[in-house]
Amino acid sequence: MELDARKIIILKTIIKNYLETGEPVGSRTISKYSELNLSSATIRNEMSDLEEMGYIIQPHTSAGRIPSDKGYRFYVDSIMKESDDRVNEVTELMVKKVDKLEMLLKSLVRHLALDTNYAALISAPALSKNKIKYLQLSRPGERKLLLILVLEGNMIKNEIITVDEDPDMETVLNLTIVINNRLSGLCLNDITPTVVNEVLAQSGGHKSTVRAVLNAVVEMIEAGEDAADIYTSGATNILKYPELTDIEKATELISAFEEKDKLTKLVSEVSESTDSDTKNSLQVYIGGEGPIQNMRDCSLVTANYELGDGLRGVIGVIGPKRMDYEKVLSTMKNLMEQLDKTFGKDSDTKKGKG
Image 1 (cartoon, helix red, strand yellow):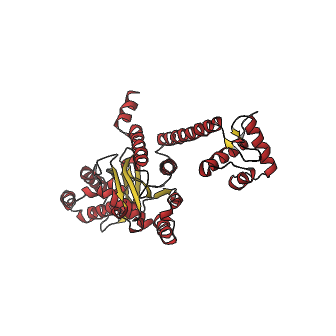
Image 2 (cartoon, rainbow, N blue to C red):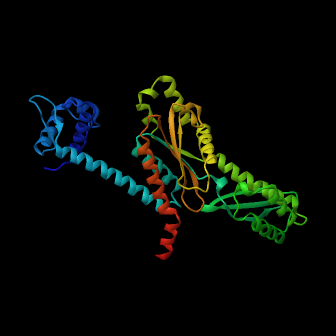
């Protein structure tokens, strides 16, 4: 007799209910708490099969069933396999990060929420911390310049700029070289007034055009920063804890997860409070230490992640102040190490050797 999908669902339902209540589980309980749309008679037949196979036992006549050692073993092995499958899923997506960055981020945050049983969030890479690889200028029309900006991670932005003059193609090429020579390798915070003045000084009689290009570069990066996506998972997990379930607190927490500006503020403050060059640096905010007032009854554990090629952001776990800190810190540390192995310098060296 095989342990088919239906039997597995029934067995897991029995085990979960018994772990929660300590009471034998009957067919009516299974019909109520499982996703199966089966009659009590059908469930009883399946339970008889499970008992015959040794996965459950009936401690007393006319009582429900409880798991046997064999049933517990199956349950534990299933949990371990599901965890391994999630890790493998994340690893496979990491390899395809260039084409599937959004899918990777959603998988990472879902993986973190499932492993910790708390809420999790992750921000898309912050453009302001990405270095400029190069920019390209072309002349699509009179008094118009097409600016193509390429950042680390091959993130591309483009915009048409209106300028005061009508430069010829040779001038446009020369200005492209002048600007690239100074901006290449810089991030937004590096474009200081001193840098701007140095570029303008080399622009000859085209200061107005160069200033328009530099302003456009800054605005494009800042606009990308404002539109950065933040992905969340497991928001309802933190509502399982009694101290967070009264109407006012629950409303505040859900509101904090639904309002993007609050999450953006959280990510921004966490990112700024941590050395951007320190990868895998874990930060713990307890109660009122956190940047969001609505989360004053929670604790927040965060880290700056890096996916290589300058793709950096913030990942975090939110739970009650009595969260299992040891488990959360261990899970976060393991995830960051996994990211570092996949995208860090060691990974690049291995790829080069291969």
